[in-house]
Amino acid sequence: MTIWTPRITGRAGPRYLAIAERIAESIASGDLADGARLPPQRDLAHALGLSLSTVTRAYAEAERRGLVYGEVGRGTYVGGSGPADISMLFHPRTDGGMIDMTMNLPAPGDGSAILARTLTRLSQSAALETILDYRSIGDGDAHAEAGAAWIGRLGLEIPGSEVVLTIGAQHGIMVSLMATSRPGDLILAECLSYPPLKQIAQRLNLKLHPVDMDGHGLLPEALDTACRTTPARVLYCMPTLHSPTAATIPDDRRRQIAKVARRHDLTIIEDDVFGFLPEARPLPLSAIAPERSLLVTSVSKSLAPWLRVGYVRAPDNVRDAIRAAVHMSCGMQPPLMAEIARQWISDGTADRMSAWQREEAKARQAIARRILGRFPYHADPFGLHVWLPLPEPWRTEPFRMEAERRGVKVLSGDIFAVGKTPAPQAIRLALGREAGQERVIAGLKIVAGLLGGRESPGLSVV
Image (spheres, rainbow, N blue to C red):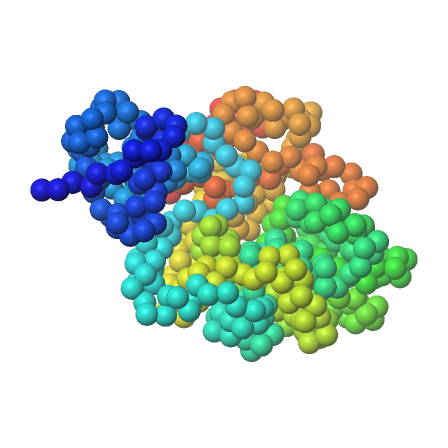
C-alpha cells in the first residue's frame, strides 16, 4: 500500500518544518482530505530517510497549527476536530481549582451536545454556502423574525422588521448608545449598574449620572428629578433581575417610569437579558412605552454563553441608526451563530434549554438559601446571582481577598457603583459559572464561614 509521502527536497530550513508545511499545502490542495489518517511516524521516517524524532516533531508542529490531531493508539488525522486541537485556547469549567463566583453565566447544561448535532445537520445542508455568505445589515429577515419570536417570550409582541441583530447584549447596549447619543452627552443609569456600561460610556465619551434605587429597583421620583435637573435624555436600566441587586421593578412602578419618560421626552434602553428566567414577570418597559424604548436582549444568558447572538428591538426613529452602528462596529452579525439561534428558537430547542436553565437557577438559589439563609441578602428565586451586604466589620476588599485565599473568587460591590455613588460594602455571588452544584455548595460554605466566623455545616446537593 502506497503511503502519503511529502516531497521536501529543495526546501530551506529544518526538515520538520518542511514536513509540516507540506501537510498544510496538501490539505489546502485536497491531497489530504479532512479525516484522512497520516502515515505512522516510523513509516514516514523510513520513507523519507529521516530520524523518527524529526517526523515526531513535524507532526507535533502540524498539530500545534491546528492542521491535525492525534488519538492515542489510533494515529494522527487531518482536521481540527480532535480532542486536543484547540483545548489550550480556552479555560473550561472544571471540577478543580479556584471556585469562580464572579461571572454571571448560565449553567453549562447539555448545550455542547446539542450544538454538535446542529452543526452536523448544518454541514449536510444544501443551503450552507448561502448561510455563511456575507450579507448586509437587515438582510437576515428569518434571523430577525426569530429574534422577534424570542423577544415575544418576554411579553413584547413585535414584527421581525423592528429587530436588529447584534453580537450579544453588550454589543447591543453599545450600538444603542451610539444611536441615541452624541459624544459629551449625559446618560442616566441606576446608581448600581452593569460594569461594562461604564467602560462603553468612557469609550464613547459619554458621562453617566446615577439615579437612586430602593429594594424594588429604580425610583420614579428620582428619575423625574434627574430629568428636571440635568440635560440627560437617555436612560439605561435593567428592570428585570437587576444586576447586582436582583431587584425586579413591579408593574405599577414601570408605568410610573414610562410616564416620567414621556413627560421629559426620555429614551429608554432596557437591558432584559435575564427576562427569560422568572416564571412570571411584569411587562417590559418597551411594551408599556414602545415609542421611546429600545429593548436589548440575547440568547447568551438563556441558552449558552458562547452563542453570541443579541437582538435590539427599536422604534422607527432610531432603527436605521442602530443598523448603521452595527455595520460600523462589526460589519455584520456572524451568520452561522444567527442561524443556530434561529433553528433553536424555531424548533423548540431554545425553549427547552431556557426551561432547564430556569430550573437549574431555581435549584442553585435553593442551595444559597440553605447556606446563607441566616444572613441578610437579596436574590430572586429564579435568578443567577446573589447580592450579599457584608456585616460589620467586614469591608469588600478584605473580604474578597480572604475569600480568594480560601479558594473562592467573588465580585466586589464597588465595581457596580455609577458616578459618585458610595461604594456598597457588598459582594455579588454568581451561581451559574461553576459546572456542578457541589462546587457552588463549596463556594457558598466558604463565604458563609467568613460571614459567621466559622465554617458552615456540610450540605448535600439538592
